[in-house]
Amino acid sequence: MDAFYASVELLRYPQLAGLPVVIGGGRRDEDDVLVKAYAGRLGEIPLAAFSVLKDYVGRGVITTATYAARAFGVGSAMGMMKAARLCPQAILLPVDFAEYRRYSRRFKEVILSIAPVMEDRGVDEVYIDFTDVPGGQREGGRVLARLLQKCIHDATGLTCSIGVAPNKLIAKMASEFNKPNGIAIVWPEDLQERIWPLACRKINGIGPKTNEKLHGHGITTIGELAARPRDWLVAQFGKSTGAWLHAAAWGRDERPVVTESEPVSMSRETTFERDLHAVRDRALLGQIFTELCQQVAADLQRKGYAGRTIGIKLRYEDFKIATRDQTIEQPTQDAALIRRIAGLCLKRVPLERRLRLLGVRVGALMPAQAAAATAPPVPVTPELF
DNA sequence: TCTGGGGTCCTAGGACCC
DNA sequence: TCTGGGGTCCTAGGACCC
Image 1 (cartoon, rainbow, N blue to C red):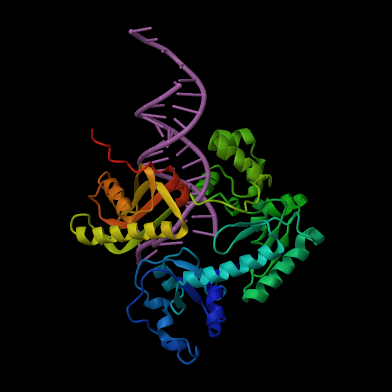
Image 2: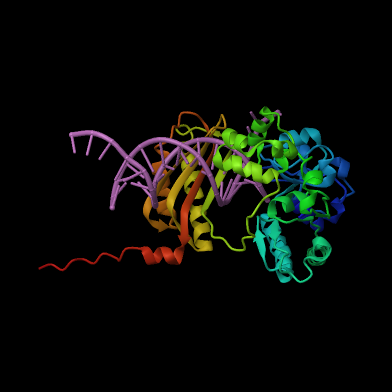
């Protein structure tokens, strides 16, 4: 989906069309301020709904920016304070995940009604297997892609960009070619001309670290990566990553479109308004800790899962991360038990430095029903003879 | 001007068992 | 008395993605 969160907000507030708008989480000033520059131009937007980026205080990051805001160099994952310097006049809207999820469900329903083999990749992205969809091969998939775009737009008012290719790896790259509201068809024989000139970073799975390492070896483009012998890549990056890098550069990817999966873990975490100290802010930390446990437990219960591995995550003021976890006998979804085990984890981690973030995680999940079936029988008081 | 939240997967060492 | 592999589980950290 194109600029998904921002596009949903533009449906709600059409008078923002063409203006720089950013969607950001985190905290804002108590009093949301409407900047004078926009006074009179925005009609009936409730003042409480938004503020202006330059008035933001806090530690949030941008989740989405409209194309008008992107023109100022503002982009996702950028700190709000930095974005405010680049584009102080941008309208700032708080995130409304519930609303985005509603639109997410809607566009996925549309896709499923047309092409039932769909893999969920988060709130705004999916893989679709065109192979067995009637007409899915016409014009290399362009006809079906156009149909999907039209049906999604009719149902939601939103635009999306679609890449069609022989596998997920190339399709993902192709989907970026003609954003927004674009379609790109990439054939196997297009590899050299359309994929090899791209930066390695465009490969889904090559992040900042691998990219840096590749740069260190003088490898910038996918074509340069493809030129390296497989054995050399294995020697540099290890058996698994090396082989994968080679395959990816040559456009090879056999992963199926996975239509169903079970969650592995659920977690809640929060970044504090200010860094907290384990001793000096003990009461506040304890309260936040308990709330996180309650939230995870509620998530587990609502979704019908229980887990055996309880863990915590700390981020220190210097941004270093520490995790601890402990596995228990029986899966649980109980807030008090999670709190108790997480408390034990907390005792095993250094607490001298101040903390920026605290998180609680439950892993090794299984459906709560299955978990109940594995529970040992309730002990019976032995009869006394 | 400091950098969110919720996930998945991989690696590597150690414990433990056969 | 000393020495084998193989397999699974647990734990901590890290890379990456949306």
